[in-house]
Image (cartoon, rainbow, N blue to C red; front, side):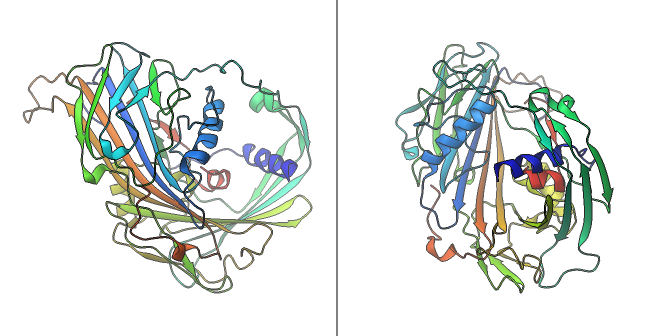
Length: 435
């Protein structure tokens, strides 16, 4: 299985990504970024801090940091992991870059009186096991068939599915050499993969000059039911004395997203969820892979969008502008939606009893809140020199194996309680890779 996964990723890495479709004004010297995620893995208990620590640690190592697996380590809100609440805070203070700071937090967060933000090293932390250098691998000839569906409705829409077959002539692959490590590969395609979406990558990565929470020294599990609402004050050497702000209820952790499914896999599958407070839009996608023969696979993908090409790249925190744009284009479901139907039989062989069940991922997008001090003058011609800014993003997500309805096990009322953006390549290939 490990070898097949490597071959599968290698296949996709040979294909070129497809083309696709902030705040304005002075940049404050002190910028704070807060991400709050509520995640629900259907049927699993609240283990956010435990699993978040492991996943966050793995992410930190990939990005250059170290981790103590007993503590969550930034970033934890990218993928969620197990059911629970996740919080990431990053601070860049151009007045004193990389200097420790503290967030004096409201009591409702249940994490003590303050959160301490410290640098996360780009180099491996002493004591960690050194990373093993990957070895070269011989990759056989492979074939991948991608079958694409989209839209909510009991019946498959006219013009679907869209089918693409990709044949790869094998060769050798040395991961340590990057793209130059692929030798002898050739690609032949028939059909065409839908044009994907470009989603701005606005996440804050681990980099010099920033301080973060959670971190190896002070990281803690966010308890279920924790609330960000209330007064916050950022203190530390070089932090502006005016840096205090209030988080309102609309910018707090979102409620848990309880995704439920009903129906036989050979029939249309009904998806439903109770309305999530403060959700501006929703998006769902499903994926199932099966083996057709030796080194031959079929990937079936579906999304709730009314247009083709949308995939897992949308399971990130989106700007208010992108949410509004994709609502108009019917890429996203409106915030009033509480149901969607997967077309009849498209995942007929992807039930829970299969070798690899069809997987569903859903996002509820909350508001992106900006706080800037002092506020921008109403008269745009007046000089404006902001001292600091805060960007707070909220999201609620859910994952589920299609055909296994765990939704009724969850309590609907329970809470799972800038630099220029780079471009995140979208489309079906990145959906297969998980965004």
